[in-house]
Structure formats: structure tokens, C-alpha cells
Image (cartoon, each protein chain N blue to C red):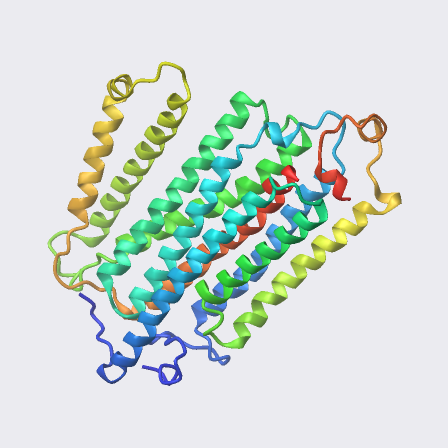
Amino acid sequence: MSSHSASGAIDHHHDATTSTGIPNKKLFMWTFLASDCMFFGALISMHVIYRIHPPAGSPDPRTIFSIELTSFSTFILLMSSLLMALAVNAIQKGNLRSTRNNLLGTIFFGLIFLACQVYEFQHFVHDRNLTLSSSIFGSTFYTLTGTHGCHVAIGVLWLVLMYIRTFKPADADKSRKPWFIMSVVHLIVFTVATLLGVYVTVDFGHQLQTPGFGIGAFLSGHLIPLIGLAASLAGLIFLGRGKGPVDFGEANAMDVESMGLYWHFVDIVWIIIFPVVYLLEYI
Amino acid sequence: MSAITADPASAGHDAGHSHSKFHVFVEVAMLLAVITGVEIVIIYLPLPHWLVLGTLTLLSLVKFMFVIFIFMHLKWDKFFCTVMFFIGLLLATGTAAALYALFSAGDSKPVGPAYETARFDHQAPARVSDLA
């Protein structure tokens, strides 16, 4: 343990430290986030400026937005941030089981946010005729929220890879089943479960709004995707069983913390986007 | 489970510290959820625009600060991390302010038929333009 523990500061857990006293990975992440601030600052400014000077015929965002859905996804992203903070807290204590559970929760909430965004974009394009090229509002809106969505998707992928990494056996080199192949299978099963889950959820949301919706008709119409989803979830449970000692623990706290910084940054960008892009239109 | 074992001498201190942080994280998350609720409700209240705008700005700022200082650990990290991040943040804010000032200046206002129509016919339904 470093001397920081005695003073109550965060312990950096054996990570290489720079001359500033800050571990390399953390310093890199904070520098990257500072540069990403400028990137999003430019995108948000672009959207606001064109909202202040809208050309004739600009669509009225209040007739396009669904503030209920956006509020729900804002709440979901906030809760994912809490779970990410708890995952970092758990790995700093060496509690691997809690770390895995919190990572899974963060992934789940991140996917819900993405599903909401996919649903929102689909709704805007097909029902509201708002496309990337239909108006300047469409261009700046999709560029800004789409870039944020890409950041969320990258974050989810990083979380999944970190989750799979927590299963690397301590004797990976001597194992009968090569670790690399097992992790690729794990990633494929995760991807299949994610795609099917998003597809079924978004389609369920769509059909819920259609008159004469029946749960029986929905289940029979989506039998193959639902069976595939159940099979991939069973595969995830199978692959997620605890089997012997693993090569992941307190020593990897900095890796999880760096990923957490990225995830929280995605959250704070949304903290700005939500009032600026959505709420301001209603006052 | 873990290949690395924590130092037993500091385990007690770390456990207490992490336990208290667990409660801090949960309490902050609940507070942020409440603030988000207030943000959503306030836009429907019959209040002056400047008051709603000011409140939204303040609440967003509070949420932002809570996340970076508590969830992102800036409160417990070395001050240099705060300096590093705020350099980027200030540059972003400065760029935004400069762009806003440039595009609001008389000579820089967009011209052309589309904008002329918007200005004189008041067809553009954007309420945000009222803020300019």
C-alpha cells in the first residue's frame, strides 16, 4: 500500500506513477477528458448557435421531442454512473464479485440508454421526418447526440471487455481451454444477447403504441429472437460462473478507475446536453 | 479470487473508508436524481424565463460538480487532476463564449433568403431564439 492510504487518499494499487505523483493511466485519462471537453464544447456551441439563428422553416423541436423518454434515459444514465462508482469502490477493496455485478449493472443501464436513443432516432426519422439533412436543426441535433451516443457505445464495449477480463484464470497459460478463444466466445455471446435484447425492446416499445396490441401476438411474432435472447442469456450465465482463482483483482483497480472516469464523463456531457438541447426548448 | 492480497495492516482503514464512500455515492446519486426531477418540473411552472434559465444553469452546474468531485474522485485525488481537467473545461467554455459572441455580432449574423424570412416573417417557431 502506498502512503496515500494512511492519509485517506485513494491508493493507486501498484500502478506506475509519474513525476506528478499521479499514475500514468489516470493522468492520460484526465488529459483525454480535458480534450474531449473542447470537442463537445464545439458541438454544443454549434447546436445552440443555429438554434438562436434558425433559418425559415426550421422544425419546432417541441413537436418532435418526447421529454418523458429523454428524462427516463437521463435517469438511467445517472444510475449507471452510480453503479460504475460502486464498481470502482469494490475493486479497490478487492471485492471481485461486487465489481462484476456492478459492471454488469452499468452495462445493462448503458444498453437501456442506447436502446432509448435508437428508438428516439427511429421515431424522429420515420414519424417526424427529421433527418440529418432535412434541416440545420436535424444536422446539429443528430451530430451532437449521435456523437454522445457513440461515446456511450464505446463505453459499453469497454465495460464488456473489462467484465470478460475479470474471468481470466490465474493459470491462463496452462489451461486446457485457451483463454483467448474463451474470451472471444464470451464477447460474441454478449454481442448476440445485446443485439437481440435491443431489437426486442425497441420493437416492443413500437408495438405498445399501436392500437390492438396483444402480448400473445407479440410473443408469437418474435419467437425466434426471444429464444435466441434466452439462449444467449443462458450462455452468459454459463460463461460467468466462478471457476478457481483469476488474474484480476485489487491490482487492476486503476484499469477499472480509468474506465470509470470515461463513463462518468459521458454522464456529465449528458448533464449539459439534456437541459441545453431538450429542456430549453420548453421555456 | 484475486491474485493480489491487500495489506492486512491497512485493510481495516480501507474497509471503513470504502464503506463510508459507498454511502456517499448512493446519497449523491439520490440527490442527482432529485435535481433532475426538479429540472424537468421547473420548465412547466409559470415562472419568468430568466428565472427558469438561471435555475436550470445552476442545477446543471451543481450536478456537474457533484459527478466530477465525488463520482470521479477529484475530491480525493491530487489537485493536479482538477487543474488538468479545468484547463480543458475553461478552454471549451471560452470557445463556446467566443463563438456565441461572434455569431451574435451584427456583422456576423447569418444572411440570405432563409434567414431574412425568418427574421421578418417570424415563421421560425424556435423559442430559444427569444433568449438571444
